[in-house]
Length: 445
Image: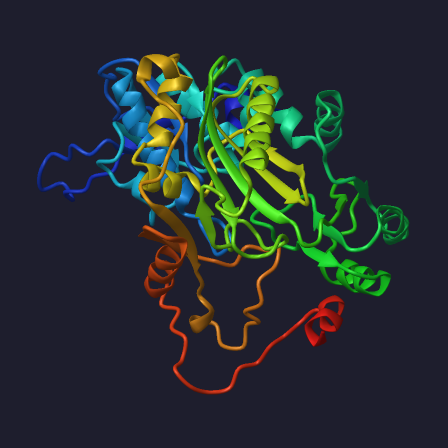
């Protein structure tokens, strides 16, 4: 007996959500699935493409991906395609009934997405706008014969698989922090001693940086292991050498398979080790010398070309001294894309959706993004709603939103962002200064 209805030849039909409660004829293109015979979709107006959303949103998973999905709809329409949205979070703009041409309120599981594709027969599926969740479906969709528009699953696998990505780094001659993948605490102790403390430790099965921590000793590693790790060979733990006192960068780019355009280079204001979604950052990396910025752009273009990126890609880099290190590559939209779009005046997700459908950047007249003035992104945190929660930032994402400050100088832009984030420094009172043990000697001097 087949495990799933579709394997037994039983397929779903789709009913339209009646937003008028039967009083008037509902015209909303909003559908849900059921088993039966009556299908309420009607014929499609023209060729379509499916956009996979980000699914349920919680603290530690940015709503910025939903903004990317909505902008991608505009890109599909510009290419003459109807936009079919698959998502299952009612609190997002992408699931508003008038955001897309057809909306399927379905879970982001392979069977549900394949059933939508069977019914709609789209030109292809866009997986790069909904964050990490849709990327996990790429291979299954491809095996089932569904065309993937944009960067192909093999490139996604190369970027996501640590061993394959390390091989790519060695072949290109790029620097990458050494790392190990371990299953037991004993193996983790051996790996950490070999890499050298501090090390960045994270479970391989989480999103949004959950369970990620920088540990400075074998004792801290053991505490972390007993608190966070799910002991299972299928869920190994990743350990990476942590680059202390490095400047962390986010690089967003869009490519069409031949041309690579840098959307923006963002310098983190917070120290390396704070999750990119929680770190304030400034567009343009103003503290870096021009030769280092040129090297950052060279590394970004080289990686995009080697991965054959078509659409958006995000790189996380670190600069220590005069060296550029590659932390990871994400061949998808990032949570910084809406900010960079706002700051540069270019809807990068819209551009990327058009590129995924075959448009060329040169024909679209798209060039490297430049901000009007200085743009600062600052996160917004929910700590005021969770009394007793430790507000110290780290590798685990905890913010629930972000604001932007624009100004002629960094100071003005940062102050505007702080005011928007409701960060008000008191005019009087006591100041507490907390330092890491490694910094206390320098502070006394």
